[in-house]
Amino acid sequence: MLTTFVVETPYGPARVHLQGADGARAALVLGHGAGGGVDAPDLVAAMEESFAVALVEQPYRVAGRRSPAPAHQLDSAWIAVLERLRGDELVGLPVITGGRSSGARVACRTAEATGAVGVLCLAFPLKPPGRLAPSRLPELDGLRIPVLVVQGAGDPFAMPPPGPKRNVVTVRGNHSLRSDTPALRDAVRKWLRERGAA
Image (cartoon, rainbow, N blue to C red; front, side, top):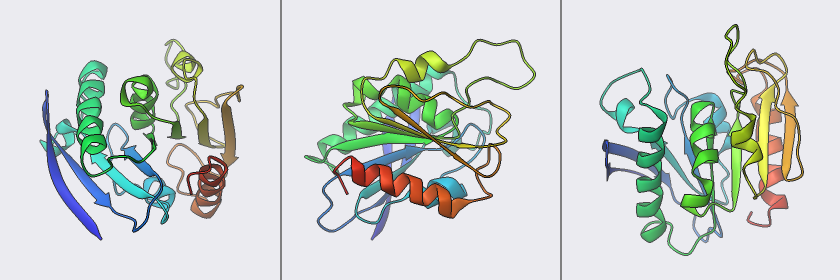
């Protein structure tokens, strides 16, 4: 059963779409990309039926804005949502956080603060294309918990390398991850089951 509700954060209301799973042993909490919503095909494909799954809309999207808020606001709002979920709807469940693109970055930066047991990154934006900007690899390297990155082979944001606790799975397509959702779904479900939570 899907329930939708609002969670107050320091930067306005966030919206949560929670798909409860009867007898779920774990939860998956996912955030959207910078300009997209929680109905992105890769987010929908990543939903695991044996998990309680929460799709989270950041306050700027709830307010109708397309331009993302600054990173510290995104992180603060995300932490507030996770605190609510862990204390109520998802109490007692191990929680894997993640998201697509910008949402994946938020989950990486806040993994310790939210008590995540793993992070799922869909189309992690390693380096903005065509710009002289630092790599965002430190956001991935700073994690001490298992991480799965699912990246399109032609993603212009580049391909993150695997690491000691980081699996990187390449699928057909680009940053949208629309070209091969079955491969994405299979990779995510395999990884979740290896975590022993599914």
